[in-house]
Amino acid sequence: MSDLQRKDIINIITGERIGKIIDIEVNNEGNINYLIAGEVKMMKRFKDGAETKITFKQIKKIGTDVILVELI
Image (tube, rainbow, N blue to C red; front, side, top):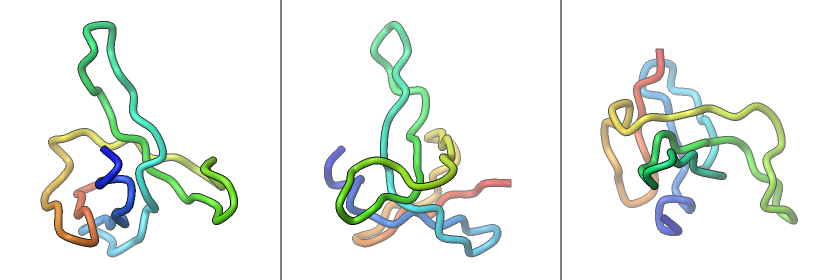
């Protein structure tokens, strides 16, 4: 998970930079429902702005520096 948190997340539909993974949402069985992405401040690990929930189905490619997602 920490490797994924270092990568920028880009929406391939709009080209918009969404941010980085800041949190995860886990269900009662311990499975990951969503990766939560947003902007992070340099001095804090907390988000600065809106968050975006990303499912694994929306992830199209995980590269060395970026995660490409398809958000409509």
